[in-house]
Length: 375
Image 1 (tube, rainbow, N blue to C red):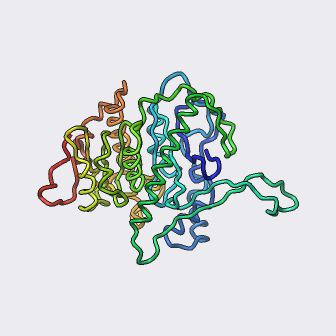
Image 2 (cartoon, rainbow, N blue to C red):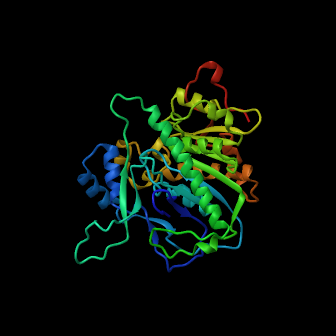
C-alpha cells in the first residue's frame, strides 16, 4: 500500500481465505521496474524492457491478489527488506513460503533511491495537462530510480544515509500494520477492494521479527538496534558495508546469518562476527552451492545458461536452496518468537547440520576469528 511519499509502501503476504474468485498476483507490476533493472545492469532500457516483458511480463506469483484475509487466529509478523537494486515483489518465494506457514509478511519497497525503481503519488496540479479524451486522476505517479555513487566518490556516506532511511521505512511499516491491527482506518492510494478491517486483532504484537537480503539484511540489523519490538532478525547473505561499529553492541536480539557460498568475503564476515555474543543466540550458516541471487525470485525464472551468465543460479537446485532458506528461517522464528508449531524439526539447520549447509562460513578468516559463532 502507498499513500504519498510520507506513507508506507509494501506488498503484504498473508494467510487468506481459499477462493478461486481472485487472480494470482502479477510478479512485476509495472514496466518502469524493467527500466530500473536496465539501469542497474547498465543496459539499454528499450532492449531490456522488450526482453523482460517477453520473458517475465506474464509471470504470476502463486498467491491470490486481494483475497480476503483469513481471521480467527493471531499471526506473527515479519517485516522484510529487499536488497540493493531490487523492489518489493522480487522475494515472493520467501514471503509466500512464510505466509503459507501462518505469518503475515510486509515486503517493504524502499524509497531511499536504493531500489532499481519505485514511485510515490503526488497531487496533480491544475496546471498539469491531460489528454482531452481522458479523465484526470487526482494523483499522479512520480518515479524514482536507483542512485549511484558519483564516480571516484566515497560510497559509504550514501549507503549510511540509505540504511538509516531504510530502517525508518521498516519501522513505519511496523507502525502502520499495528495501527491496522487496532482497527485504525487507513487510506490505501493503490486501487484495491481489500478489506483491511479483517486484520483487526489478528497480529500477535509480541511475535514480530525483521528480515532482509543483502542491503536489506543490513537494514534488518539496523532496525533491530532501533526498536526492541523486533524480537529477532534474519540476515540473508548480508552486505554489511553500511553499518557502523556502534550498532553491533546496541542489538540485544537473536540473529541468524544465512549466507551463500559464493558472495561472502573475509572483511564482510568479520563485521558479522562483531555481533558474536555469549548472552543471546547469534548463528551463522552457509548454504553450499548457492550464490547471492539464490535468495530473490530470478533464480527460478531463468534457464541454465542465462542463470549462469548473470550469476542468478548456483550449483544447488533453486528449489532445494529455497527450502533451506525458508525452513531454517521458520525454525529460528519458532525458537525466538515462542511459536507452538512443528518448525523445530528443522532445528539442525540452525547449527549448519545437513547435506547442503555448513556451520559458520566457508571463507578463510584470520586464526582468531576462524571459530564458528557461539550461542
